Image 1 (tube, rainbow, N blue to C red):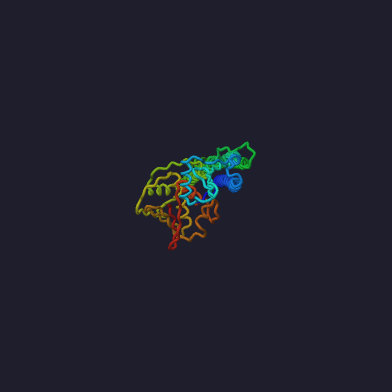
Image 2: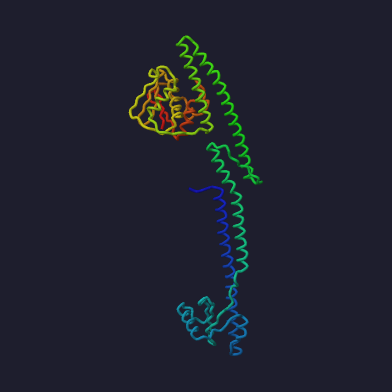
Length: 395
């Protein structure tokens, strides 16, 4: 997998730049060496021609000229033998030959007049200028690289703050006092976080105020219902107020879930116990009339009891509401399936996960709540339509 991060791109560009700088340095040194080589070759031909003509005229070697040309005559017999042996092995022992022997440039002149073995001491000068120039450029590039990477450091801090924010923690501070584009992005994000924090807090305050205000009339209503002489009416009103009170508690849980402010307390429970708890909070008279529970293979699952029973309760409520015969079947067989006879969903299941989904009945929050709680538990909901039945499965 090829990485495309800004840091990787910058590192790649600077790596290529340093490689090209190194190649340029090597080519520069080679070019200087080639110029010196060409100059030496021309010099050596001129020396050979001059010595031959000088010898024809004066019958001797002009040593002063050789010394002026920084060329010396090799007279050491052992060294002469080594050089001649080297040239013979190479097949270069001729009237005129040039080669490098032990890092020294050796010239053999072996004509019909004289025989000389010379050492050309003219070498390419140490490339001090190139080293200084290229070293300076190298450190400038490294300094520029470190400066740019240091400028990108706030991106990592901002990324971590965004991760923290995505997990529901709104108490973050991304403000920057710098003047670059990264600081502008960080400051704008900080402003957005502040706005979202204020909106969520105002929403929470509004919802809590409404729920608090509703608790008072519900409490008064329950007291008044206790004064009724008609036991049937008293029981019915009592059930209604209990239902309203339960709904307020559920709304409080939903508010915490959607604001990611819920402390999950998972524990192991039997699925049959969770289903039974969900039927209890469904608060319908004679639940066996509407619900059939088929336990084939019960199993244990680790969940938050209050939240997970709310999931099952919403699925049961929807199943009864949209069933043609107002009856549902619960199947427990290492998985939980809720089945009812009814029309197939008009849209993909994902569309019903949206809050306030358009529906003929209710507010369209049932599956939104289910999805939110299942996401917290890292679970999913599957749907299929088979033989006129809607089947929902918690996976």
